[in-house]
Image (cartoon, rainbow over all chains, first blue to last red; front, side, top):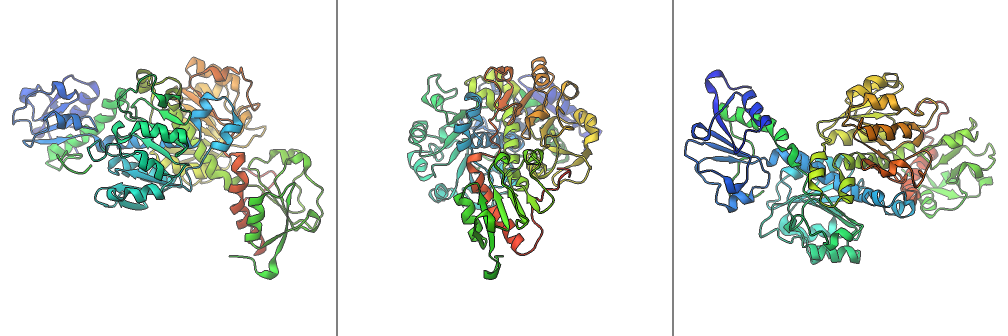
Amino acid sequence: MTAGPGASIPVAIEPNHDEHLVAAVERAGGKIVGLDEARVLVWIGLPDDFPELSDAVEWVALKSAGIEDFFDAGIVDDRRVWTNASGFYAENVAEHALALLLAGLRQINTAVIRHWDKERIDTSVRSLHGSTVAIVGAGGIGASLGPRLQACGARVIAVNRSGRDVPGADEVRRSTDLDAVWASTDHVVLAAPATAETRHMIDAESLAALPDHAWIVNIARGPLVDEEALYDALVAGEIAGAALDVTDPEPPAADHPLWSLPNVIITPHVANPASGLTREFAPWLAKNLRRFAAGDELISVITPGREY
Amino acid sequence: MTAGPGASIPVAIEPNHDEHLVAAVERAGGKIVGLDEARVLVWIGLPDDFPELSDAVEWVALKSAGIEDFFDAGIVDDRRVWTNASGFYAENVAEHALALLLAGLRQINTAVIRHWDKERIDTSVRSLHGSTVAIVGAGGIGASLGPRLQACGARVIAVNRSGRDVPGADEVRRSTDLDAVWASTDHVVLAAPATAETRHMIDAESLAALPDHAWIVNIARGPLVDEEALYDALVAGEIAGAALDVTDPEPPAADHPLWSLPNVIITPHVANPASGLTREFAPWLAKNLRRFAAGDELISVITPGREY
């Protein structure tokens, strides 16, 4: 499916012309133009530098998955369609979540530091197969992660606000049932957006309710976890470990006590590596541009106030 | 399916009565006896201590997956049936292989040591999804690993001697085609037994043939890898990294040069943790004992000289 010669869509890529995205737009039948001629704006910068838009711009494609900063800055309006990249990056983030969970369960963090400490590691290794994993905030990332976990022999509980079905989930729970989830899962993957409602969802109470062999993985946003409560729970042995790709704030202080714990893995917010973003984003943009040219509904449309 | 009251099978568990296995035998309708009365011997010791057997022993269940030591010691005879536990442990080993590969690709080893070194890690993280993984020696472990890799979005090449189909493989190659495999895969998982034929299968030549972004995972036996050649290839950047659960010898010397490399992950032979072996082995033994009582073919029968 390509746009015909008459359907060449004028696209601005701002604030700079990324080579991967330029190539993708041209492959999809688009034409690179300045913002004043554009029907489509691909914005790969920060919210601070976002330009004034005329009504000629019908669609703004943001390359981020987490776009709360654009909402907070009042940039997302209702005079055009806005898309983010949450669906596209979901595969990458789901993979990182699985990597973190397996690294913790198989004690790879310990093995890297304590060379051939077989006695300690052999007794600490746990299996993902046969366990239950709750994915909290099961949108696109959850839908990508669920089938991966199932293929690893785990049972998947997806938690979302509506209780609607999620691919790869053996059971779906509403977020109002979180107390029951903590009591019935072995491990937790946080994949929810940062909102007032999700802030410190992992706190002293939920940590106490989880089994002492639980690993918590956070590939979503730092504020979902009360880090002081997490530290206390880890020291007290209330849970087995935590693997975090996000913290609050980022980076954590160099002397943050979480760094000192042997059962904590922290990766520097690389579930979606920035260095590969436009390379990975390019085919998605091309696909969405073809849909735009054909008048089809776009993928990953942002609906202010919607459930993630 | 349980053995009837008249079918109680006399089983010896030697050299010691492991509680998990005793319970499993009794649950499956067996009766724990001394070796002189046994029709079945469950041997959980080393080859060195293996007892003389009368022809009354019809089945010997070994709890190991790698049983070359029992072959080498001339213990495995053709006067009874011998089983190992390769099929049963396959899930566990496959899981560890996936954990090692993902840890390397997602740079979790680096993150554990270099706290929030975002610049370095962000540019080094790679994705399993979209890549090709060759599983060399695709028996039970390969059959467990293939579907896990596919669920992660990888393409799977299985390599075995016969070229026979393997579950979860997108393509099957004979081990005589290894040169073509090195040239067409992104990553390699070694799952072959240690034989004269597989010794140093990973050597200077195969390392040079692999792409420079390749990770090699070894969850099989140390001698499959020429560790000097591996070290040289890693230092020269001929491959991206190596994740080893086995080495030659084990443990590696404390000053072994592989320990010094940032792109090497070594776990201390814990793909099948010894501390959990009998607990994990117990349900498998019960299942096989029920088959024995019913006269059905046993699972994981050892055939001397067969292909693994």
